[in-house]
Image (cartoon, rainbow, N blue to C red):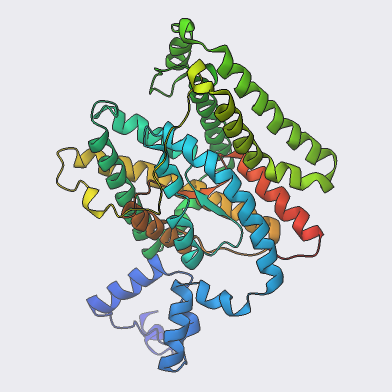
Length: 400
């Protein structure tokens, strides 16, 4: 047998082992770049590679030359609509995070500009979200009381936002976008349901006009705060809150009954803000127990680089808060982007989204913004409004 095998004309040649560095390079490439995003760069001139590289990392350079006036008209309508939601939403979520209300407005300005340049989704809106706001309040509130030391609390919130952005961008550069694919539908639905419940519980403070309310996110703590302070309940706040809640629900109902009324639902948040402000102003409702936001500083976002507390004794808490909220905001944002991409039949790059979210939060932390992401999945009102707006605009022959 041995002699017969030796005389066989066929021989298996074992390739020589690769050098260590070459083997390491190939393994890293297969791990982090299995889709080979730079395949398009091959066989191109140096100048063309530079252009393609800039377009890959800064997508606005790719789609801006093809931008049409019809797209601008549709985007203008969508932008005004989302801006009408961003004002009350930003203020409300900043309150949830125990941060100054003006930070909610600041966070609706700089991050969307950054995402517009770096993001790969055509339809998502960027802003603060309920879950991240609640987590910031819960995690930082365990170490620092926002009422006793508001300056340090604000610094830690900005620092947590910075580290959240660093983590998100790093995950994108390391091509770890596939991690989000492991989130099951059941997990996301359960997460959204739980978050919606927590948000509703926290809104009881404003509806009932309570001055003091728990920072805890569990049902027992919220109910204890509500029913142990019945003497603080204000019927004026209850009436105002319920009336505007009924108004918003009514506009959604009308839109679902007849699609031509989509503009009513789109303008309902802004209408509520204007009517509520006028009502409080002319009736001096603040003198009758109705809580108001108060004076907001004028001007654009002030720089906040010097507010980042890298030398604080609570730096570990800020890093931990940033890591947890960053991952959750990332999963939520990519889920929103993918839902719109599926609806409108286009593809978004999870790794580009991670980089975009990371860079906008890094920039935001330096310009008085706290954690932002794509809004929609938890903020159901924003989702329905934006989706219905896109649907109705598409029916009218425009392209978003």
